Image (cartoon, rainbow, N blue to C red; front, top):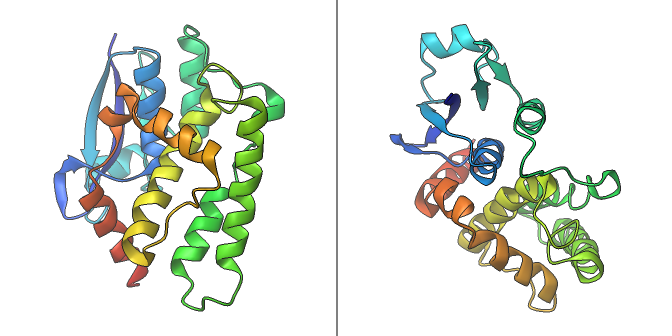
Length: 213
């Protein structure tokens, strides 16, 4: 059985994998569990009718397995995958499930804000410090020695942060956050991550479009 996954096509390149971190989260889950899947790219700039019939909300990712029902929302999808394909387990202990959950919103706010005195950078640094402290105590992954669902959620967002802030603001995660650097190096080098990430150029193009609106 090969499951089907609808994901974002690259901005300006509809035949290439796009930059959606929620789509990558689902693809990472499938890769880490060695579940065969068929990938279909959706041009969100010109959403095709067949896609809107499947998901009128017009959002990706969308997932279908052998029950022939299309399911949206990455939270729901990864839970379905975990239940149907329990090995290897990617279950995150409940006490760790929200670790790092605020980093993405802090990064986006910092990226969009033009006033350097508004505190957005400090808010991001505060979240990264919390994350670094957690990894120091519990690493190398969020819940210890083994990768889990929370890592597959946060890793694509950290990659967006690295690429977008590096390009648009010349900003990097401070070297003092050594555990964060070790974590991203560990995750970004996994075969599953390399296979499912969008090219930097498409990520930058997508963020440039968002920042211009």
